[in-house]
Amino acid sequence: MFKSNISFAEEQLVSYLPKMGKYYELNRNYSEDKSNYTTSLLSPFIRYRLISEEQILKKVLEKYELRDCEKFVQEIYWRTYWKGWLEHRPSIYSDYLEDRNKLIEKFSNKKFYLKAISGNTNLSFFNHWVNTLKEDGYLHNHVRMWFASIWIFTLNLPWQLGADFFMQHLLDGDPASNTLSWRWVAGIQTKGKNYLARKSNIEKYSNIKISDNEILNENANPLVEEKIYNVNELNLNIDYNFEEMKYIIIPTDELNILKDLNHKNINIFTGLPLEDYNEHNFSEKIIKHIKSICISCFNDDEFYKNIKIDIEFENYFKNLDKWISNFQIQKIYLPYVTKGNWRKIYKKIITRYPSINFIIFNRKYDVNSWIFSKKGYFKFKQNIPQLITKF
Image 1 (cartoon, helix red, strand yellow):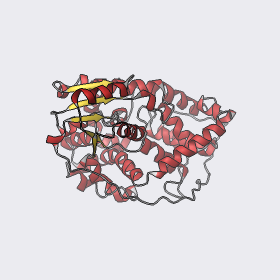
Image 2: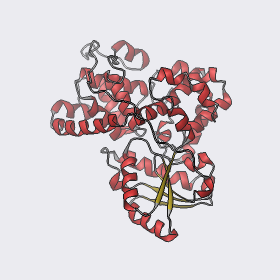
Image 3: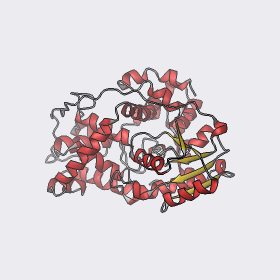
Image 4: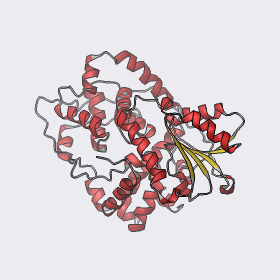
């Protein structure tokens, strides 16, 4: 379904560009078959910033006035908003992981949980979604909402295990978007307001016909969470000098940052320490996708033609040692990474080399957006016309 390379991603962006206006606004909620997807299918590449949100926004705003593509622009900014919102409340993610670990131990042998993740429930359409997720590494966003709602309110399973199941299989599984979306469906993100999958809505927006014996809980109360998460201020850095940026470690969460910054005078170390990329039980499909787009990003794009690049996977830290030693590096730049596996990897890297000066820097796009990510999305989207003037 997806080709894991830069050419496919760029072709997908160009081919969907004519649909980013009214077509997207009118059709985005329809979950069609594989031959007629109504959305852009760019998320498996945006997730790792092979193509960045800013790059897409520039492209769409070159073609349309904001009023003609407002819904598409807002949906791109949702990802940015979720990241910023979670960065301001980081303990939500650590609490989710802690709860998930306890629940995995508790539910690992429960038949009803095992039936859900193997696609063996009494809901045939839900079973189809499970198998599609595993096969394609993707589900339409509307299907994800229905899936989460049924998981929580009809199958009565913990939302944390559902969020974990998604992260194991989604090619575009983003820690912020995934965690907060599951919380929203459950009714604890916007407290007291849950999302209920309804038979009429599923049948209207998909090709599914639900039989009379497939019963959904359409009257469930939202889950309750007593804990209150306060907003933390962020320590962000946009005051960096390109001329001093000679060596950089590029995480797979920020693949194309140098192209976005148009900076070439640099040595790159990139790849993925596979043994440390273990925050979830990621499927082989996800690992293969990350490795492929990483290699393609730096090998297939003319931008990187004359840049010295080391790409490592199997012996990441051993070869990182060699890279640092060969160049006698004393200062390394690190693109800021949001909540997820790379935070743990960064900590290991910085601890491993105490004599090196690591400079973590931010995209201005993120910093400008996260200023407005402390409250609800309604407040955030009021600032979108101002935000797009920044680039």
